[in-house]
Image 1 (tube, rainbow, N blue to C red):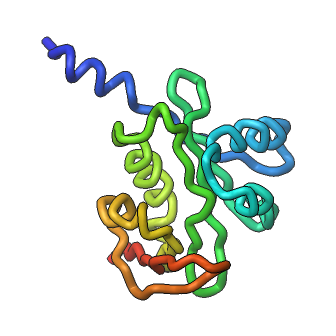
Image 2 (cartoon, rainbow, N blue to C red):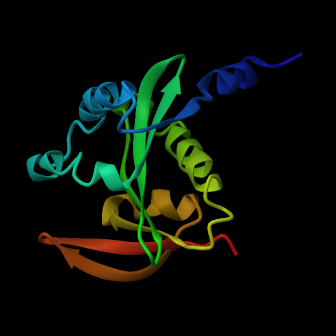
Image 3 (spheres, rainbow, N blue to C red):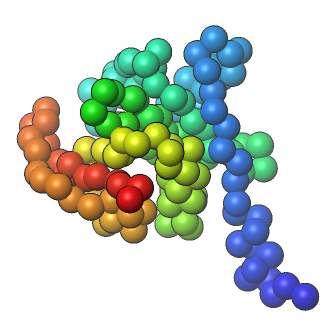
Length: 152
């Protein structure tokens, strides 16, 4: 018999869905992505869909409701983990970590490390997901942590 806490935890598990630009769901992904990015800087919102054609796009759903999004942009040197967002009502519940881990598992046999340029206020989140700080960077007037996830 499961306790109430265990049952609630199971209810939070979501489904990771890969979305391709040629799929009809891509327009839905774009539409769903914007509310997930509520609270970010306006100039960042303008960049949300840039280079999507070069990326592996993901939507994270709980009970068929989109609550998270992220993408992987392959480069010759690494896999860039970008545009990660969890709806504010779901933050702090382990969903972001769960989504990140599910996405990363898709690339464990790729041979390249995963790189994220993280705002300093979310560096702790990425550390909990297994990323390690390599260096500090300055981009667009922000100090970011360049973080690496290695499958080795």
